[in-house]
Length: 78
Image (cartoon, rainbow, N blue to C red; front, side, top):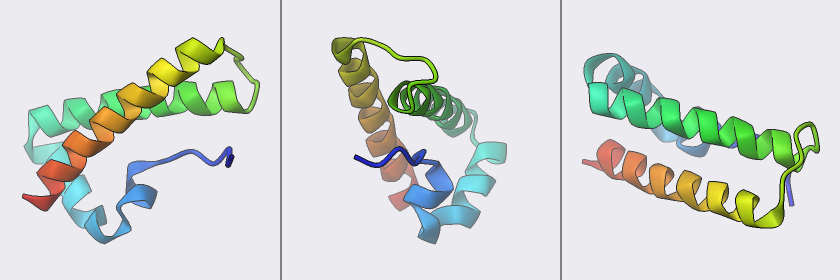
């Protein structure tokens, strides 16, 4: 498993400009992106053992991150 953070611009490089534009023009997208970033950082810190957590908590965060990523992708693809 990689301990590389899953930043939105790295996950969707083809949508970099759109991510930036939506963050400033769409409050809902901005909120989703911020929530994604927060959860992504928590997962990364747990994976690198900076802030370890139980497996169930980690799985829950990963599922939330995946759900947010799917919702973000849907908005980027629209």
